[in-house]
Length: 111
Length: 355
Ligand code: SF4
Ligand code: SF4
Image (cartoon, rainbow over all chains, first blue to last red; front, side, top):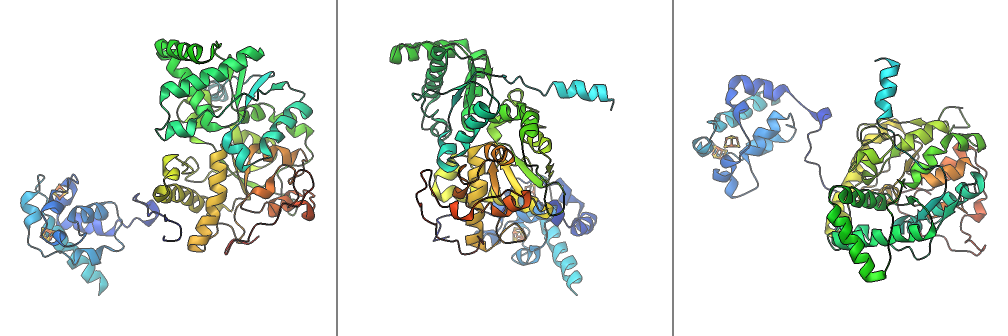
């Protein structure tokens, strides 16, 4: 970067070839409200954990829904499970339960 | 679908391309980065196809790059276009042929604006008269130079001595064709095949014996994008667009890339060097990169023109592997000789790209 003054920018597009639909199938079953999310970001704006780093529950929900779940566990572990996100959600998405389920499912898959 | 129906639909995607008597305007980017391309185009048209092409040394830049970076206002650029139309009118021509896809896009945009807003045309005429005491007629035909080569692709195939076939295995060469966004994405009716099925380059490749690769990011922008590139900190956007294309075309193992926009040809060629230096990656098996050609160079090659006279030593990616595949005889020693036979020096080799 320093040598060039610019660098390759990672894409924000969903790569269909990298898509993993396994997690959304399980989470959608356990907590169907994940499908109600409109990506407004109110949860991320309110999240206590997100005040201290680049954690974003909105981004996690988007990642699960678009099947881009490769590095998701490291992200989910930043959540304190306080439930503030759930209180502000205009769509009544149970974000806390989504994240709890990710921990449980991914934890089990790891075993 | 019935063949008849197919033909009828396809006819809607055709454009009229003038047959002769062209008023030719050069491209700032093309003559800088691919210095033999425009001479090759003129030579093919004049010597091989016996067409009349006129140039006026008073023609200037269209200022398209300044316009697309919000430095040159629309009133200014349309007055400059009006001046170029005036030079054409004064020379007695009606067929306007720009070499640059950026310029081509500018002219299509200005002509369309004048069609829908005649008061803007009146303004341009007024500004031009005030500044230069010139008047102009709107061209009868506006064709990009790649349209002209496309029109004569079959004649050139008959005249040519080479085919786009690998001489080692007799198979057609696999070609990535890249169309500049400003050719037909803004005004689809102005391009052969419109924005959806641009056939201007694929038509040439197929007529000359090659096989066009249909890869996922085929219609993706090369990333030039004017301000992405001009501001250094933003160049990553430009680079990443090209990288996306290279990654998408890589599995098809193209033998070369051909582009009709000089900006695209330049970026697809030079960014391969940058990506190789930054990440140690090349997109071909040999580690030499994928050669990138302008369509004039491609036409020149099949017509048997000397690659070094066409300025192909100016490419970042070496063209020799491609020349060898087609079976073009060239003199290795002439590569670094200038137009007067003088030695022009050998560039420093890159760290990763093999030469
Ligand atoms: S439950 Fe987790 S995601 Fe929701 S506000 Fe609390 S820390 Fe943030
Ligand atoms: S607040 Fe609710 S709707 Fe908005 S992004 Fe978060 S989960 Fe989705």
